[in-house]
Image (cartoon, rainbow, N blue to C red; front, top):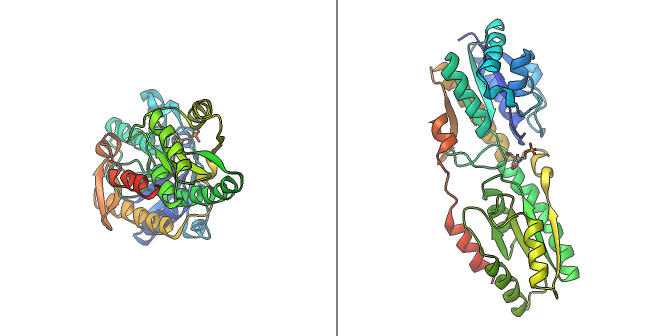
Length: 323
Ligand code: F6P
C-alpha cells in the first residue's frame, strides 16, 4: 500500500487530533503517503483532500475538536453518492483508509467496502463509549471529566440553595457518561437507559434523601433515558414534590470540546498507530479497540450491532453510596 487516507466523521470527540497525528506519523514511518479527507464522507464526495506530512500534524495532540473537521452525511447512505465518493478516492490514488468516528462512520465504511472493496480500519472516536470491541472510546474520558467538573460546580450552588438538580448528560442511547460522572460526582441518582427507572422510584429517592437530612440532591440523567429528558422528568417531579426547589441543567455540547485528557491522548495514539499497522498487514473492515490494555480488532458489523453492556454493579454502587 503506497497511499492511504484518514478522516474524522460524526460527532467530534477530544483526542481525534491525537489519533490523526498517530495515523499520519505511523504511515510516514512505514513509507506510506497520507491524504486527509476534510469533513468525512461529505469531503469524500466533494473530493476535498489534502496531503498530510509529518509537520502538518505538529502541535495538535493537545487540541480538542478535529483539524480535519467533521460532518454527518446522509448522502453516503445512497449507493449513487458512494459511487461519486469512490471515483474521487480512485482519482486520488488512495488504496486504504482510516475512519475515526462512531457507529454511523463505521456503517458507512462497511457499505463502502461491500460496494468497492476499499480496505478501511476504524478508530472508535465518540464521547459516548457505546462501541462493542473496546473498553474505551476516544473522547469518553475527557467528556466524563468535563461533565464531572460541571457537576461539582452545580453541586456548590445546589447545596447553597437547598435545591434538587436534574443534570442531563450526553450519550445518545448509552448511559456510560452518566454513570461515570454520577459516581464521580456523588449523585443521589443516575438515570440510564440500560436500567429503566420508574417515576415512583425517583420520587422515593428524593423523599428519602430529605428524610436522611440531605438538603440538596443531584440526579444525573442520560439523554437516552426512557422516562424522558431531564426537563420532562423534572417537571413531573415538581408536580409530585411541590415543596422542593427543583432545577434543570443540560450540559450539552461542552462535553464534546476541550483539550483531551492524558488517557484520551494515549488511547488515541495507540489506536491510530494500530489502525495503520492493521491496514498494512492486510486487515479491512475492522475497528481497532483496546481490551484489557491490549490492541484488538473487531469486525465493523460486531462493533456496530453488538451491544456493549453497562456494568450493572456500578448502578448498584450508586444506590448504596448515595444513602
Ligand atoms: O455521538 C456523540 C453525540 O454527542 C451524542 O452524545 C449526541 O446524542 C449526539 O452526538 C449529538 O449530535 P449533534 O451534535 O449532531 O447534535
